[in-house]
Amino acid sequence: MPDSRTPSRPLLAAHGLAFSRDETPVFGPLDFSVDAGEALLVQGGNGAGKTTLLRVLAGLLRAEAGRVEIDGLPARPASRARHIAYLGHLPGLKADLSALRNLDYLCGLHGRRARQTPEAAMAIVGLGGFEDAPLRTLSAGQKKRLGLARQWLSPAPLWLLDEPYANLDLDGIQLVNRMVEAHLREGGAALITTHGAYAAPPVRTRLLELKRPAA
Figure 1 (spheres, rainbow, N blue to C red):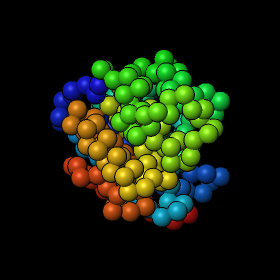
Figure 2: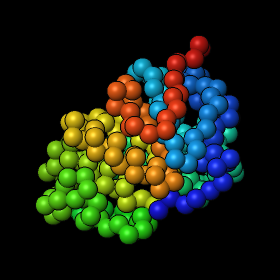
Figure 3: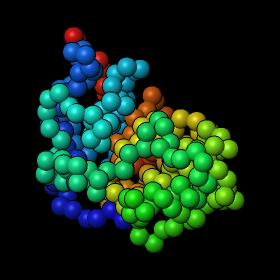
């Protein structure tokens, strides 16, 4: 369950953050922060660096310049592991395991939100009855919902959601919004990449617009 923290100290902050690929600038320098109880929408066209930014924040890519702070301290692998839950374009699940076994396995690796179970999380995302279905038999939308169940089970307070509305119908979009609302009510925060604000959850929100920097 997301823990409480001093309101004046951002859960996550970036200072002068920049990334280049093959000496070509992708984004930055960027300065932004996100507080507990808040969502930061990251918008921008294709190639603006939205996914890359989330991967840098998650520690999967190394920034070219700048620094990231988590709860007021420099981001380290251990603090990222405790504070960040990342949902990317790929589900990060094992195709030959059942839906429920995938969640059990990930809870064993990363811990579990208090008073929540994998079975309950599957029911929340509309996958009740699919517990024993092998992942490879699920549709793209169902796999996205299972990824959302994994996200809900994580005890990390900071969610990094890369295009969470992709492959979802209107009911699925509303599900994402309800989950984000509930997570923020408990003191969590979220960074959400999206092509359009129409899908933004009705919560306290700030906007970060990414534009590809001049070479």
